[in-house]
Image (tube, rainbow, N blue to C red; front, side, top):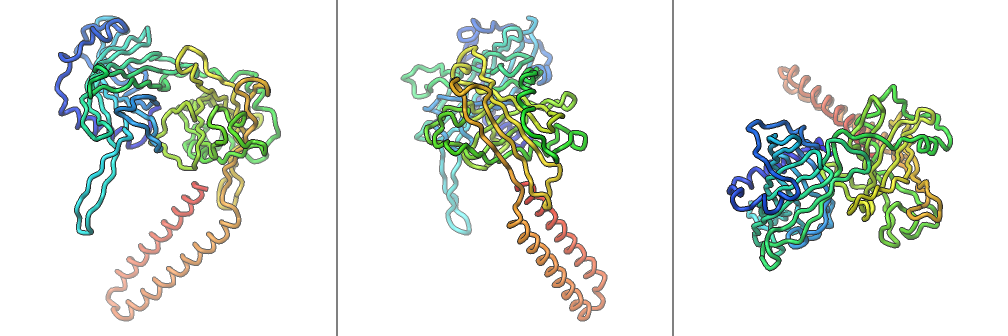
Length: 467
């Protein structure tokens, strides 16, 4: 789940600055007491390995529950996300055993406020606090287990600084994975429950990121996706790469359309949810894509609003499906088999429920003249009486309607013409008044008109992308 965004850099700076104040904790906490029974330690070599030696790479995000005393309950768009950064990897004398140094950061829901005086009067600032830990331990590649101990800092609800001692454990950390593989673990306090620095256990979940094996495009799944009518004008794979960023950017903010008798969450969405609550939008995010095989791994997220923030997209099993997609050449559409991680599959070795099917049709031309947009449906391949069945859901993401496009085009044409005439009259006036500035005024006005034209084109493209 690596992300091409400024977020990893921001967190790296925060963590690096915070750790300058941390003393060495090797003598304070004993790896032998808390981790040796899970992953026996060994003497590391002096050679640092590349980040690719670890299945997550150097940066990974995940979803957590618990830790209310130090993290609180966050209802914002950053809800329950954490970040794991690998700082150093070393081999050991034991084959398949690696020494890992890492940092773990949580965005706390507990805020802090401060007032700053300025020329315009006092300004109030509102920020979220961070809980950050530095970890040190070992990862066993054969067993897929990782155990680390560390120290860090956090804040209580009252704003008091807490000094945290903790043990971090992960399971299923393998170099290869499939759709049923989910990395899970915990962060537990080493302080006693009566200690002011104690916090409740935090359960963490992460999606594996490397050497993924596609397995859901079975014959039956392809037959299910092929059912339905053809579409005359769709996106050909030869003219636009299957892994194009344009596709992943477009498949977001899809408006969900439920059946007329859906007035409650029961049997209307893949999730159990809250009775009477139905998400309004759907967005997709590519986890990875294989252009040669025309396969992609995706997150399918149900949302209450059309807000889309790719920087803070975390795996939330309560609102997110994990699936595989492929291009159906016969029907010219993208087909997806999606899986739901229930509470049983999160806490044990149960396989996820992969009964959700999804089909998307994307138009060939998506411009201001072509108002047809992305459309598709989500359905369950289960029968009505089966547990987990839900009614078929349609979704669309239409381009701008003619009622919006026509006034927009008229406004942009009138604005461009008015500005051109105004600057032309200004140029004539200045030249008559100061004949010697003719070359300068000509170049200046030309640059202004060119800039206006570029802004006009950029604005039109932004409107099309957001339509």
